[in-house]
Image (tube, rainbow, N blue to C red; front, side):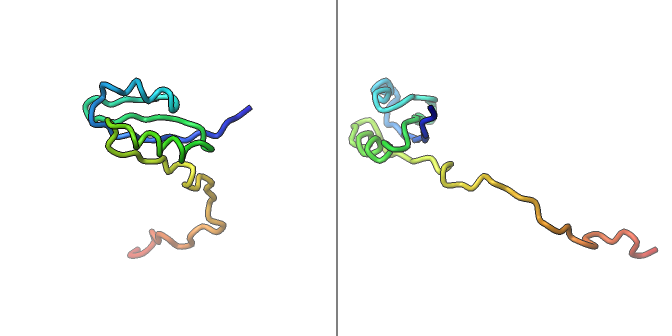
Length: 91
């Protein structure tokens, strides 16, 4: 069973209360020097979790991960560029 999850970057005023974020999701990373934490939660609950986290007194702002919106399917061009480099010029 695969549950879709997404990341939330939480900018903090102080990292002392970062333990309180555990009840909203999985705290993946905490930067004490830059005062932010990366939190993972279910994709279906993201809007509710962000709203609850922003109401906490030690949180400055939250940013949702853009990774689900980015297209990750790439394809090669169908025809290669012809005569992109002409090495025989000047001979």
